[in-house]
Length: 137
Image (cartoon, rainbow, N blue to C red):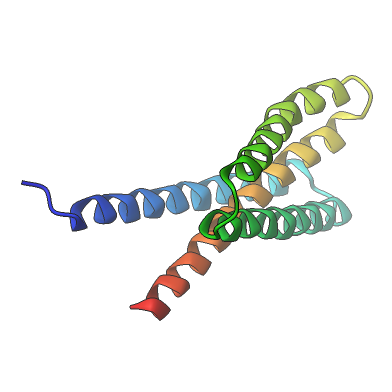
């Protein structure tokens, strides 16, 4: 017999494993960036681009969660979700298109900073949601 607490526990465990996966992804991206980008200004650019992507992605995702919890019509949420899905699906194609026009180092820098920035934003969102849950308990 399942209680109502089991799905919440499984959901929290899923979020924890997702945050752990993002930590591993960031560690891998940073390791590859330091190994491949040997010049200090490229590593600084990687860190800056990752941080900028993380901040933007965090605030977009946070706003999306706040709107989802409000009493706004579902149609607006569907439009935002579809727009975000299109952006996420087009980003890899844009990177592969840019691979023909920019040098490999900059292409790798864009890819690695995007991966680590989005992973970092998910970790920040996980930590933010845990603090909100603790405040309401």
